[in-house]
Image (cartoon, rainbow, N blue to C red; front, side, top):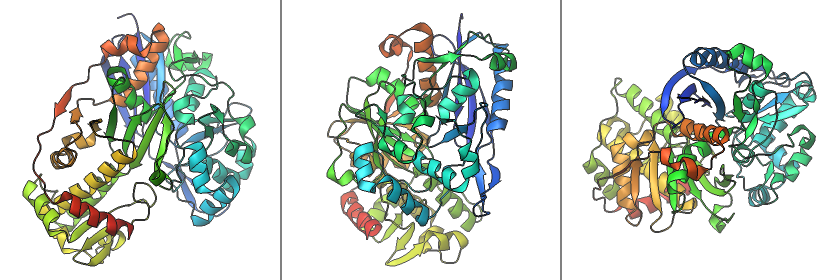
Amino acid sequence: MDAAIGVIDIGMTNKKIAIYDDELRELDRVYRTFPALPVQDPSTGETLEMHDLRGMEEWFFQELKRLGEKYPIKALAVTTHGATMVCIDKDGQVCAPCIVYTHEPGSGFQESFYRLAGDREYLQRTTYTPPFSALINPAKGILFLQTHFPEDFAKTTLLLSYPQYWGYVLTRQAGVEPTYAGCHTYLWDHKAGTYSPVADTLGIRQLLPERYENSYEILGTLSNDAAARTGLDPSVIVTMGIHDSNASLLPYLAKDGQGDFVLNSTGTWCVSMHPQENLDYNPDDIGKIVFFNQSALRKPIKTSIFLGGMEFDTWSRIFSSLNNHRPLPEYHPGAIRAVLVEKDCFLLPELVPGSGQFNTSQAGILEKGTFYPFGAIQTGEAVPPVMYDGNRFRALLTISLVIQTVTALTRAGMRKDTRVFTEGGFRKNQGYNSLLVSVLPDNPVRLTNMNEATALGAAMTASMALNGKTLQDIAGSINIEYTDIPSDSFPHFEAYRDAWIAAAEG
């Protein structure tokens, strides 16, 4: 092996370094979690959470040094979760807290943002960005710093998207690339290929990098400091960086880019990504969490999301705590059929309001005409009977997740015969997959064997940069196996779905 590739993969929970060989086979990986750090809001005194940038940096450099002694690392790529930007001062140091984007600053702040930046629907139509809650739109995160940490933000001379911040740590070079710039930021004009008027409204255009390159191009080589701390040669190249969802899509674009498919990527966020040629919204999309990413190839990716994994994990924990720590039972098709037939019990989203496909829904369970809010169930104040019936509750949760998935796939542009590839945590959820394939008879629905699609996608960008190859050139190194899903029969789904939607939107 002449050259190895290192990938820094930064998720909200796990931080990872993975090593790949020149045939894109994974050789090694290490994980670590970094709890958020507290920071006091000087405006309100509230304790907020911020990312531990310094702790992560020390660990990344330490592990790269160790891994560099085992493998001939010649290139590095960075992929990160979304909605995060970092403020850099004139000395190249972080000068403002990197606030965790799940912070909800309140309806007053949200309304002040839209009064300043523009009407929600107008912004969605022009920047292809939906109105997320919390600080999931990075432009809101910037306004939050300007408002709540004005002295810190005033020191900013460079404002970097999260993957590009880590590229800057490694190279001291600044840039921007399509997958992060165009991912529900409000800051990017997809048609013009430059920053949107929102950047001017916030007064930050001069702080944003002018250099705009593809994800698979070279940002720079290691700085003297990074080379010394990692023990790697200063000639090691670092790519521009890539958003995690788009990194996970890249292997499929290499293998299946000529056909029509939607990637159903399941985890904390369930993300439906549909490569398209045009930026076309449907009338029903406006006001929903439907948006356009840019792929690493600068092509439109129609995207819809919801917090499916978070909902599954949260409801599972509550069920266990109410039932003497008993886990959810396994898949029971008869229980799903019974819930569909009876049509009198519905588990409704959204645990994080405004985060998914039913943004007016109140989270909870509607059973036999009585609504039990999520908060009351969580505290035990008011618990519906279904929470004590394992098979029935598992069915209820499964049906809810499948309805949300089908809605997301449809809004992402799934048509008749569009292939659906499911990857991530729900691949092992037999009930979810059996129900999903049964209610999509016109679509080939298959599971994939991709365990680490995000890290692999980032490694692909480094391979392209290192060897001067195209995506097609390296497609032969990408091995994706597809598994068909056995289908059970679930009559009455459509009638139940209609009643569920009426309850969620009522």
